[in-house]
Length: 195
Image (cartoon, rainbow, N blue to C red; front, top):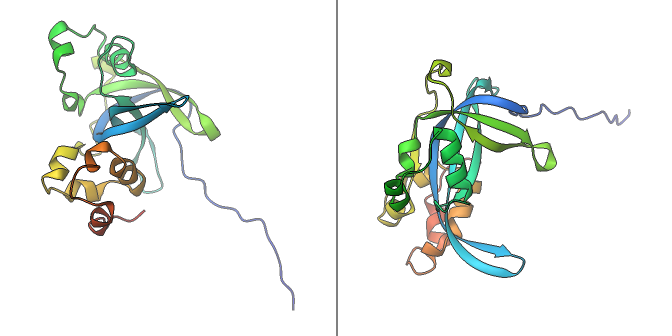
């Protein structure tokens, strides 16, 4: 009798390769007011994330791969959001848009993503760019989805329960939950989503 050790070969989850890819905005998630620590200087900023589908690449279930990017909810000219919006739409942000731009209007919009290798070899979005109308060939596959902390606080927990555990944990750290009667233990009882 013997005990044999072998190389453990695990199938790696497919990733979007580096380069420029056609994509479509499919999810916008309100992350609330998150704590920022820049060299010991603490501040709180309203944040959200955008998730794009890249239909050219699929996972093992033949679903499109996705990439996401976090943003501060600010249209200051030096903000990442302002830069990406201008590049994505191919035009400057108007003065009326600077007074109030509905981020959810981006759901379903096509673009090109310039993907680079980020930390730990994971793909990272470096630029969001305008796509020619003639290049928009594929239909949206993943249904549009918007999560709002304000709706959750009103008792609408269905969309929260559809989020991944990692995203739920980020949301639960938001300042909006500091002064509410929704303790994190209460929130976790409603989350029946698998990892």
